[in-house]
Amino acid sequence: MLQPKTTLRLRKALAIVLLAAGSMLVTQVKASVHSYKKDADGITCHLDKGLMKIKICSPDIVEVKYTLFNTFEHKPSLVVM
Image 1 (cartoon, rainbow, N blue to C red):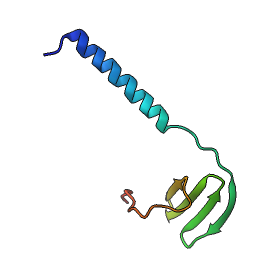
Image 2: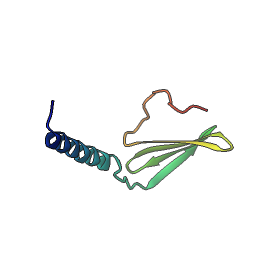
Image 3: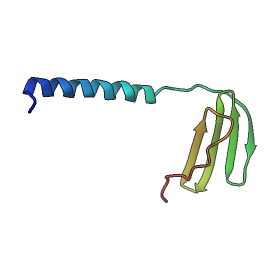
């Protein structure tokens, strides 16, 4: 069994690692729209840094996808309506 001081140190280290990982996930990507195309269900914007798709699912639900790549991955959405 670990000593209370060791357990506290491990918890602090884990908290620091989680905060560092979380801060990397929240970075901002600034991009300008170069062109856009109107689709049947929304628009697709070609940016200087990737693509953005804005899909109108219903009058009160909008799905926004963004990628740094030139195409979107063909993965099913995890959105439940």
